[in-house]
View 1 (cartoon, one colour):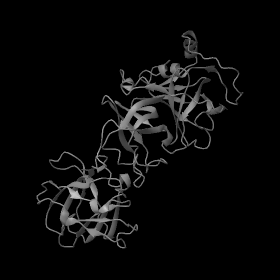
View 2 (view 1 turned 180 degrees about the horizontal axis):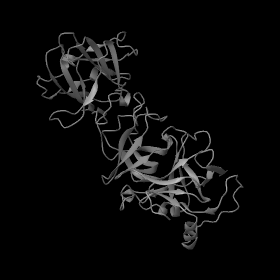
View 3 (view 1 turned 90 degrees about the horizontal axis):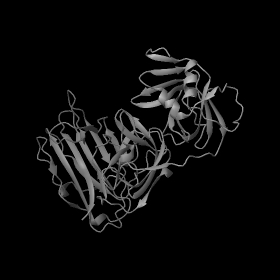
View 4 (view 1 turned 60 degrees about the horizontal axis):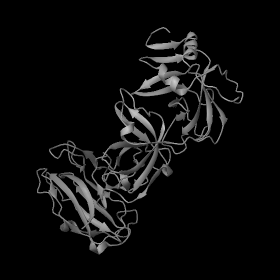
Length: 416
């Protein structure tokens, strides 16, 4: 093998694989048009990678079962396959969402493909799903390996289960995440959620804003999660295949507030929040400037000059029917002259802030005194709203001559 930045896997290396016992025998798989050549296990394939990308020039093949497909939209131009020895990601030149599905046994012809390491994730790249992958049979589903979060920790460079289908038991999402959605379907941003075990070990669950379950509220109970182990540099992550793989229906170990939006996911619209522009185009944004050392929602109508605006930030709907003593709490900070921020509540949101009947509860909260000094709102009693369909909204207004900068954080509903 010539050691260059992009190694060319020469035919004589096949003999080395045979000598090292890396070949795998299959029971007469269906004949395919692409030459099969020597069959290599996925574990042997992964071990070929050392420090340089390897492009295959010989007729070699791997067999594996598809463990994660593109059907849910959480993966795009990506498949994961696994055999009895290991697993690997296939990075494709086009989507295969109508070609290959979970449980399909496939043969991948390696000639022309490149074994690559990107952000410490080993993968096969340049895979043409119509030319390099051949379906052998269907219904050959892989049983996930039952592991702990600690088992997934990086050993050297890689997680020992990188690319594999695993199941974690006795886990739950942290309190900060269970009122959010898995991702942001409005802005279509990918998002991280954090899963914790009973010992306090944590791991990231990363989901795409294009996935079919992006707008689903994160499961709030304790139980099991089945996922693919992925890796980004030195961070081990889990990739969900579909929502059914999240089975968190048991009682939690950690008791959480009923709801919290703390903006640490750096998204205004995650978890069902929406913004509405009635006048102008000034919008809420995320910031982390100042001594609060955290992310928060911010709005200002000043950028070189003031702009007239009326902008609403509307919460998702809450069902407070069975909450014994519902209490609202948040933090605020502001600076500069302008109209004060208003806080409203409704039980009959129409989807249009201008046609909804709102109740002004601004005076029920304690607000910042200015100079960007953060203030706790105090406990705002919601006993008059113990029903379904309760929404809250912050209304910001500014003129062409003035406007305050307002910041909001830790919007929380408790049962006190």
